[in-house]
Length: 114
Image (tube, rainbow, N blue to C red; front, side):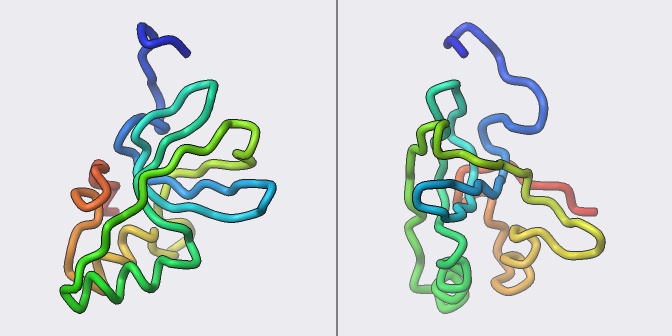
């Protein structure tokens, strides 16, 4: 993807996503900053740190989300953070637990409210 190409579809800058990575296997949740054939830049946290992110935000201590780049060869799967079969998205779980919309904290765009 060159700088003159425009992205379309769900995986655009600001979209909240869950990325599954390989070597080592890990999951990262956050807002897309940029996406190219080289890799993906995100602002967010490892999925194992999600509850800490919630707890720190709820307590008012604050949390600085990490900004990371993952080369595309590590990306196994990327999915939009959305509710599925009645299960709330991570963004919805965050909002329910903290009363705060996570999109502005991550530099993302608000997800669907349905």
